[in-house]
Image 1: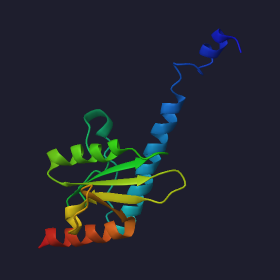
Image 2 (image 1 turned 180 degrees about the horizontal axis):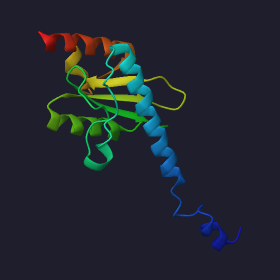
Image 3 (image 1 turned 180 degrees about the vertical axis):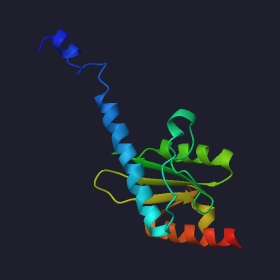
Image 4 (image 1 turned 30 degrees about the vertical axis):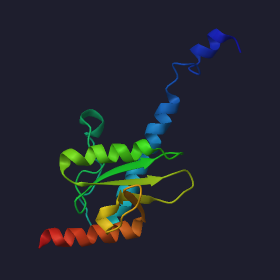
Length: 145
C-alpha cells in the first residue's frame, strides 16, 4: 500500500479507532457491572457518573457502602487501575473499590485489605462480585443505624 493512501485511510498514526474501541469497551463494562450491582442491590438509582470524563471522579453516581467505585474492562491488568481507584476515593473520603474484568474473564473486585480485616503484603484483597456485594450490603445496613 502506498504510504499516502495508508495515512489518508485513517490507518496511520492519526487513527483513533483503537482508542474509540477501548472507550466503547470501557463504557460497556461500566454499564454491565453497574447493571449487575443495581439488580443485586436493588438500587434503581445506581448508574454511571456521566460527568467523570469532563470533571473526573468515580464511575458510579453514588457511593456503595462507603466504597468509591472504579470500573475497568480491559484486556490486560495494570497496577495503574488500582492507583486510580485510590486517587478517586481520597477526596470523597471513601474506600476504593476496583471492579475489573479482562477479556473472557469474570468480574473481580479489589478493595483495601483492612476493610475485610486482613493484612496482606499488597494492602489489598480480591473478592468475587458476590462477596463484595455482601460486604456492601453489610456496610449499607450499618450506615442506616
